[in-house]
Image (cartoon, rainbow, N blue to C red; front, side):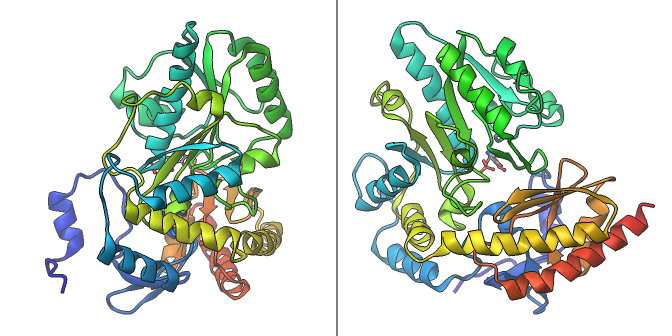
Length: 403
Ligand SMILES: Cc1ncc(COP(=O)(O)O)c(C=O)c1O
């Protein structure tokens, strides 16, 4: 039986945990589907799924069974040896993405890091090294030094400077800006097909076409960061395909492990061909437990109808959100696809997130004015019908509080 400290976890956190998170004052102890429960039995409706991670919802019986079985069989052997689960996940991701090789790691930032490193590795192997990267305004790619270097917001960057040199940011709303910025020194362009932390901004077809043209003109590689918008979240495997992008490298994380930490970087054959043993590695990456979770998720997504469910439920959610927006003039824009949505307001969104929490609805804020929804893929029409009136009441209350 697990023995935990019976002290107030919020007080102990304040004393002993590095204070880098602004946490809501609530302690969850269990969950099922889209519901989370406190120790006192209060039920919260979760439209955030641990920032896009609990793709199968909470307490998924198939995942719980598989993880328990795996824990009793074998958890970890390191990447010094083979195990069948990692190769299985790699081949499934290859058929979904068209990128034939995977490197497994533990987070989205590590997947981005691997993409940045192997872009440079590719150019190093050609004998004419390229080291520069082009990224986009509002981009978020993670907090490690490399990923932070291609992340746009100065608020995240400034305390840790100097970062990796040679990164240029361009405005995605001005595709012709790529003409001047992408050169024959550019190792890769990195793009989120839907920017998540930057305010739920899907890339336009014009920008996607300009990226493809810039890559063709200069030979620069293309990295698609699908950590937040990929793995079926939009009702298709990856959103890069929706806008006609053909990445050479792809970063995955979040939904892939359905709650168990796993990230993956995917590579085209020509990029993968440059990799040599010892170039990169990680102790935990793609261990048996993480890969078992990813296999359960991928099985649900592709064989058990979850991707189709996301497409259908996403359309239902979009309809409800657009109706809600038509009644709430403070909402300037509704952006997203599938089960990633942002409501852009004419004011800071923090008060709305607080008002939602008071109504036991979990959402969050990105980019100051955007309310973000990242519900579990398994959300039902009934749960959306329950959530939308709570969301509307929270928006009305948040707007009233900031008028
Ligand atoms: C697009 C994108 N890339 C990378 C990351 C970093 O992922 P992680 O927090 O798992 O390191 C995130 C996290 O929000 C993300 O949204």
